[in-house]
Amino acid sequence: MSTADCGVFVPPVPTAGLISRIPPVLLPRRRIVLLGGSFDPVHAGHLTMARAALDQLEADEVWFIPATQAPLKSRPLTPGEHRRKMLEIALQDEPRMRVETCELEREGESFTIDTVRYLKKEHPDCDFTFLVGSDQVEQFHKWKEADALARLVKFAAVARDGRSPRTKYPIHYIHMDPVPVSSTEIRRGNRLNYVPQALLDYFYANRLYCKEFVQSRVPQHRYMHSLSVARLTEQFAAAAGLDANQAWLTGLFHDVCKAMPADRMRPWLEAVCPQELTMHPAAWHSYVGAQVTDRVFGIHDPRISNAIFHHVKGTSDDPLAMCVFCADKLDPLRGYDSYDLIDLCCRDLKAGFEKCRETNREYVDSHRKDAVWTN
Ligand SMILES: [Fe+2]
Ligand SMILES: [Fe+2]
Image (spheres, helix red, strand yellow):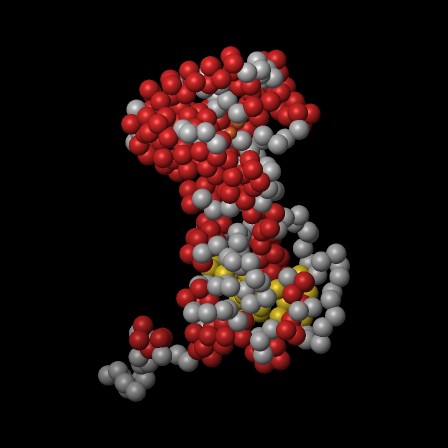
């Protein structure tokens, strides 16, 4: 206690140190929704769920908790560092959402009970609600120490189709309009409009899911050819001082429309390059592939589109287009000895390209007239 000259009590001025000593119980409590999952990758459905939780649970924040390896899933996950970065990209314009990495930092499998105990200890000023999908409610009894967990934290779930699965545990149901997308669909290259372009750019910069995108659209032998052409295109590009990842993507996607039926390709050609309709339908996959790579897969790279467009006939002298044209013709899986020409392309791309074009012309002249279109 202190007194001024007049004898009136003057309270001491609070300092930062004093404020920091106020017991947590006196601070306003924050309401946090915890959203665990693989997020492999995160998509619009997750964000819609988080927004519904913020609104209906009157929460202050949603924390996304990517799991190391979800205990009830056997599929190997994309490395945690990538899933964390993808979440950061997806949440960059969401000030009330953030990534909590405690499970990634912990060794071994992720168990919710361990996460909840850790977070309650680290954040005594927070009230947590754990949000799960309605499909997980029916499995909740299988979770590690489910009864103890239910006593530690509140649970909320999304009611799907107005359905609230039966469980002995208290669950607060929230409602949201269904978002027709799943991480499985995204990994197969479907419904990519449900992830932001910045996330697609991250996929392609880090070669995430790209192989599955192609594999889900072509037969196995064509997929193996695509992988082989990707490797060879990258090899030629590296030797020529070009961007290796750009080359790998070009090689991987060059035949992505090879198995598309002609009647599905025709509307693409009519809309974008009707002059190519006069070409043999077996060549259409190059023109449509260039469009699909850009518009469906979101690889907005004019050089990649150009290289795929010209990969059948070798009609572009852009170095990247030369790389994929040569790689396509010299793919070792074609079963003939292409070693010398591969070596030439690595030493002198232009000379290798001219030689490949010449060899291709000779092949076409000595076989049926549409042989060129089968590449
Ligand atoms: Fe090919
Ligand atoms: Fe092709």
